[in-house]
Image (tube, rainbow, N blue to C red; front, side):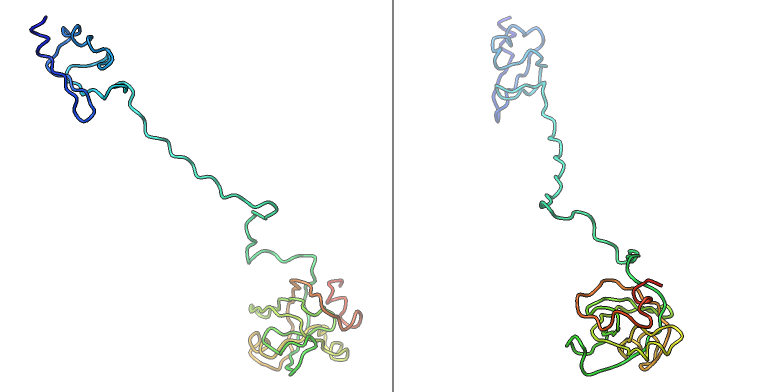
Length: 207
């Protein structure tokens, strides 16, 4: 036993305990250092430093799922509406006659521009979509008109007056009179020229 025990070489290399040259018959020698060599030791096995186990292999840490970004109280976490969302059915829409104009000044005080439209019935600041033969433009009511006599002289009341630039873009002619489809997108908060007259029901969606 003593001579065979001399064949057992125990060394500590880089923090690991190495036991070589032993067989199961050397259990008595191995048992002399119970705190260093575990019971499940296999001859030739590299043993870890004292205080660790050869049987327990640490498993890789499971990935921690990313937490959703916090939402501030009172904020709207819903997705933004699509540009192609259906218009509000409670707002007026329909077919009307559109004429065109170009003035140096507008009732709103803003300079004349492409998006300027006029109406005798819609409040200043109202946004309206105008469509003609597959082409569309969004205008803002920044002036009043047409006059009552001009509204009434058409087969369908002329409740909207487009800037000549918008009319040219939609119809190809700056000074023109055409039938268009209108859709009020948002009411303005400015003044209104008239609350009654030819085409008022059409403008308000009460036809």
